[in-house]
Figure 1 (cartoon, rainbow, N blue to C red):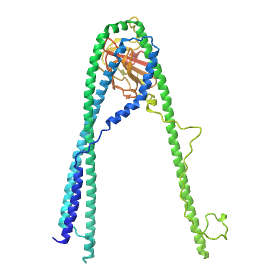
Figure 2: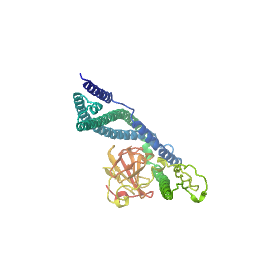
Figure 3: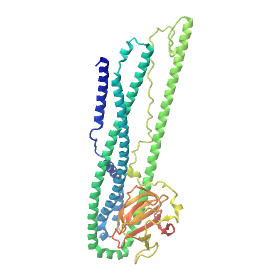
Figure 4: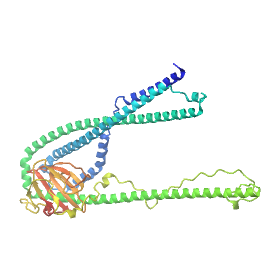
Length: 502
């Protein structure tokens, strides 16, 4: 084997070995990591904790003013809340599972495309290596010293440069694609781990749901006589309505406080943005002024030198001629001063720094819902659930007060939908109404949904018209399965018949 052939073989072998190491690294066992799903869930729960604490305190304040201390429905509260939470968790997990499966399918398609691209690039690189080996990888120095035709040498060197550039580009592209394969494999493994977590949580929630349903059924059987007796007491019904009215009033005040906090936070962010823009503009102006001064000084020095050269004497010109005497001895010219960073604006004394508003402080702040304002939807709202109206607004409730809303009789588990877009401001169990959800539609218009089996939305969640927000039931110790529905404006209940197409 000739010396040049040996060099070519050695270069090709080295390149092939390097490529083999790259491929082995890329085709190693898939990299697995702990999923971020648990961390994200924990962060979301922590964000809701502050708001939930406020709502719990609000409920306790309402409970302190009540005279009834032995309501049988309270015994069902924990079980009915657990059933609602389990059903909501199962629904969320099903949505997560669907999204994760979709993501996994997309990753699989991307993996196939990357694998095909890598295979093609491997073939191209292998072909280049074979050709390089056959050609002998002729050395550039040897070619220059060969004494051959300079034109041919120049042409060969140029061709060798093109080949080297092509090889470098191919290797860079292959490395990038191999890295993309690694990332794809890591994401796919992460998605699979998430699916396993979801499956485990689903089994846990299903077991919890069955356990709580059995527990509630046993409680209902033992409390049936007491519940029936308490439902007939007019005082209980009045207290239920007072409780709901008190909740609405306190929620209204809380929302107003949060709206003020949200407005203050927005103003603070605007002030911060304005201060940043002002500081940047000042820094830019100072930089421009400094550059202009440097340019003027350089031009002045140039003109001074030109004038001195004409007169035959060269004398350094001071930056401030009027401050230096003409007979002062010459000194070495100092380097130009370093640019001074613009000073940061001092904080204003009259506006001390305020802590940023937490999510819990603005979660209920009213937002403008998408679509038309609620008041313009009068007579166009769809019924929140399919069923038969068993009690109308204003009709008598036995010996008690009149109905402030409507009761729609329907099967347990029937889907309840939001009548309009807005934001959930309450989603919890309340004595007399069981699992209840309240949606703020803007303009101080609220819709209330009670007696639910499960609440599928959390406080602060945005909803669109027709979104599924709950399922019908008979929570709160009610006899029949269905939905209690109210509409309120500025805290006062009004007849929904002229607004909703029942």
